[in-house]
Image 1 (cartoon, rainbow, N blue to C red):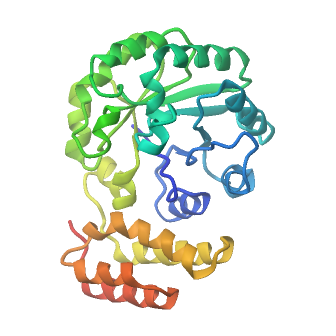
Image 2 (image 1 turned 30 degrees about the vertical axis):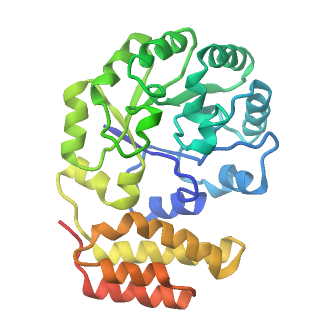
Length: 310
């Protein structure tokens, strides 16, 4: 079984990816948070620079509904040495969807078809696609698959939800196997947070050999060990070292001082908090910290007083 780390805007930065690989590993491929600037911004360039991604396999992800924009970005990525890019047709955010980007592009199938025809004709790189099932009805999935069947997609990553489901409604694993008719490699994405969730997906399609995991892995960095070995180690020292190292790297490699680093670390704790037993008041202290010294002290108190859930 292969496992990929899903891109999560603001969280799975190059700093997070390389630090995660150092302490946990087990990820076959990492994906960048989406790139959306025709001429890559400084932040986007930092995400794809080869020197920032040594020792890992990285796939850049592009968010666009304009063929000229998509193709311009791929030219820059080719110059950096990439041979594959991923098209984001999965983001459910309303600000993205309202512009017919991300999963919002699925609402205009004729325009999506024309877009795909142009990029597959002209793009010098292999193109994989991360998709949702549609906007509001599972019946849309068949129409979307009819479009995908026309193109030499290198891989289809399927988040088994509709756009309207966001991340709140349950995943729909029964829809995954329909895409086998494309004859391309498939990757399952959507609520893989435990061995039981993985088994539910495999029950729907026993041929799954690759999972993409996002929030589940941020919330439990030992999740891949649980999925492959059957039980987590629950190594508090390793997790604390990982978070300390991550924070130190944000301080030294990212501009903006305490404020930006605190924002990054607090966002991670939104997911990590439930990993600890009776930790609510300690997590609240972390989230209320206004200085890195306060954050560090609050984190140390949490680790000293709370056990990790088994």
